[in-house]
Length: 426
Image (cartoon, rainbow, N blue to C red; front, side):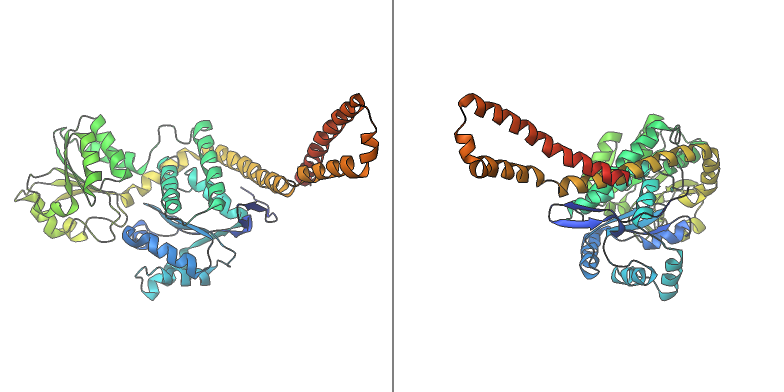
């Protein structure tokens, strides 16, 4: 899709002034980085807000939010700073990602940096799943919105990113509604469940669910729909584990209780934000409780929650995000025609959004027109033509008042319409 460079569009909100050219995105995605490696860029949730606040202040960033999914890690920001590879290197260093110099260099080379209209287009394509591992999966829109809302609640975003997010959500909804790109969607979760289904497990299989996030909630719905009923949910926050367990009719435990669980299992489904393996050889041995039969692990976390040693030491049917890559490529080919339809919708929404920004500029610039016209009117009646007005009879005054009121309304609307027309058409 060919895009033409445009001049930056400036818009004004409450106490801030910003331009589209200040929208910047630093993206690390599955297109340039192996999924297993991508997991090394995921920031720990426990001190995420503090880290983002730190870099926001340190690098003079007006607004920022952070997105991490199974196939991308992105930083979306509004800043007048030059965002290039040198900036990104300093930015990554300030986040203390724990990378060695060699790894940092490799990630920098693979980073994609967007700004201005290209940043907006990238975010639109991302929200519509055109940049996803599985084109057509709707989960990305929910993940994008949640990431934004989390940073909004932390005070990391403002009116600028709010406007862009409104555009992203509107565009994505149009794409999912008006194209077949998400018809019978094949998401990472649905692909994982299909592989799990191929193993022909009994519906009374004992299922341990580690993590109560969106991914595990979604795959749990698949299992419940197909009559699985024996669940135990483990999560760092017990209240969230209980919420999912209630939905599934299962038991709830804290993550720490995993090492002492002795009721056995047939399937482990895990997806947490941990940067270290949750299922270690010690934990897995304890969970087996002497059972030597082959078990199934569905690991949808990036990085994996399962330690590599577990797969080497025990008989396991292992399903992970990385193994779904080939299926994703076939899916992309099948939906090629829908990509062009979606891109047309994105193009239309970019044009509409730029037009909206232009109109907003005019409205804000012209908001003093009504006050100025009223001021002129009052000066004319009470000062310049005061004697003439006083000499009129009441009927003449009423007619004059009607004429002035009519002209006042017209004078207020005409410059607004003309200004919009001139700016939009030129």
